Image 1: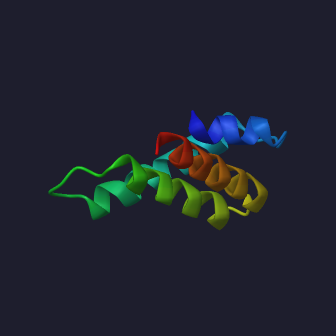
Image 2 (image 1 turned 90 degrees about the horizontal axis):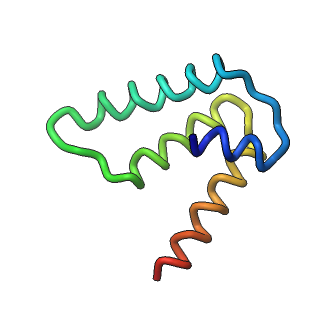
Length: 76
């Protein structure tokens, strides 16, 4: 949902299939890295950022990063 919201906020088209594919990539990376422990939300967010950039959605990734940073500031 966070990725979808980032795409919507940037008025960037992305198919549901592409979103599912990127989500599966994030989940596979998390599963491989966190075999014996539970990842924190920050770990998942880091991988979302990486996948967005890897797929060439740099403006969407930037929006996602800035949004994430702004929410960290609010929480403090």
